[in-house]
Image (cartoon, rainbow over all chains, first blue to last red):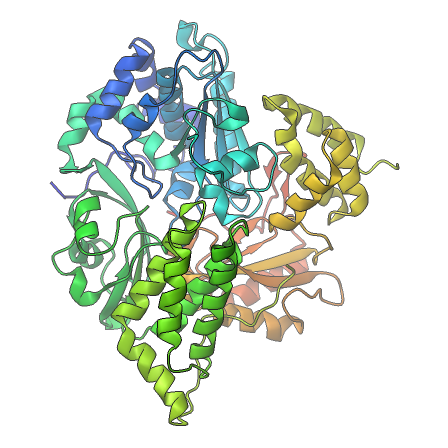
Length: 437
Length: 185
């Protein structure tokens, strides 16, 4: 358990893997043939048995999500692949869509059969023009071969697949915002309930799953849910794609068995910290998860429970490493700018509070911090988290709180320098406000 | 109302509309189509799209202001977007912005005198493992240094490559010769 595994990245480095013939020669589209001979409900059972949890960040059990879809409404069921990958630190879905799009398409087809859905859509972020082109070509090839369209593999099953470009909005990764956006509206999250499984796209039952989640489905069909559940650790089955970035020697996308030791991951997979520096901390799950200090990383493994017990979370495994040259005040200012820019503007606490917090972090970074600023930010955080329609507000405050809590000395020192008249030359990661928007 | 879009683009829009259970889902593509033809999205285009898709103009307008990839005024022919978010920030994105400022003599959001370049900083582009990076029009340039970016700008001035994604042709431009379109793996 906890070693490196290859379910998703087996063929990712084959230069022709994006083409149907090459992918098929390496085993693609075998699982869908098997799936179409299975009872759709049996596939949902296999998904439940695999205990796979959604890879987009929330970690909700996929089989359970699928089982919420009502089958007797007379309305069509829609399947949406969430490829709006925009969480800072994450780029694994991009790798899959560029390098092995047929794996994703096959996963979607198997899922569509299980859900008895005749129409699916890949919602891909607008900036991913190249992954769009690669995936679009793969969809066209699948249509040409009759793997999409009517009477797939002679089963009588019809399925149409569309790929839809977003246009630059982080919030569209939130499933109900994504659905709004796909309906041709501003991507602002909906109040839940009703959940998309009951009333999603155009008011119809809809399942929204992350790219990586669906890419696991062919393996689960071929090997069975129980075999998948044997990989990884309890409550965190299977493998996880980790997008590793920051101050490491070998950034990139890695597939590890759930439960892989965090520090071993940095040393052995990521080639250690750059320039021989020491580890300051890690943001393990994407920017919306709590930072862990180097000390806190000891004994922690890359899985849902271990990271939760350590006070953070696995999220979508956007693993960002900071070495001890990092200015933590500048780092959190950088992230606070991201969140204030990306708030969709619907809920006041998030829209206004996010800007206020950025302003306070900025003045601390610029040498204008005031006594009480840290407490003020913490107070604002408690008024944002839990007071918004979607999880954006809840998760935005996690990095703020954890940075202040864990690097309090550095923040305090920075504020007291101002009071003592000490001038510091900034080394900002942030830029002056500008741009065309 | 004058025609806001070419016949070709109109035909493409009809094709796109048919992909969806509800044609209104094509509004984002419609906005891309007009932007690709005009370089920006005008009031006239908004009205035209609204009529095409049976939407109220304000519903189209609010999309243009909500989504960052739609422009109300034209950018430079080559619009450089430097990712500024944490991983790129940690790996030196600031140096790229400083270089562009020095090289082009303009501020973020301005267009160079010859109309060729503009630049801005943008939020995470999903290229954290190949940081720092930028996107020029719709093409990624990864693992950058100011020196590498200098070479890319030089070659853009010489080659004038197509770096745009075309909704009409459903394709990304040819890109800069000899330059990989992705370094993700």
